[in-house]
Image (cartoon, rainbow, N blue to C red; front, side):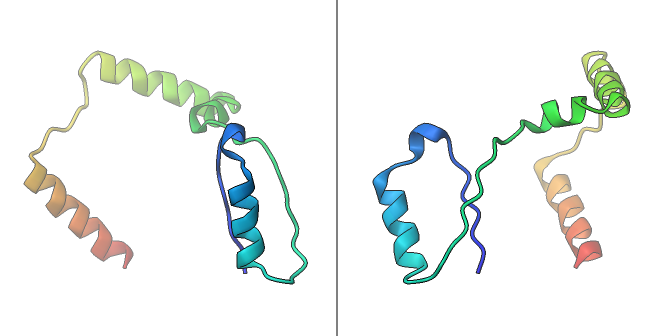
Length: 86
């Protein structure tokens, strides 16, 4: 079994440890801790991605290439996309 718990350091508390103990009773576990990068910061690490983000931000600021639709149109688009993936 694998469980991913993402939290801020100040959210770490004894109750969480108790929950983990309860979930993995008498089993050996491995705890790996690493800091979580913001997705935008992650994308900016690669110069191609960073330039793409800057270009897209500029396009949005100029109100160009934006697609507008109603909530119902969005639901239909989302439904079609789900069917293609499913």
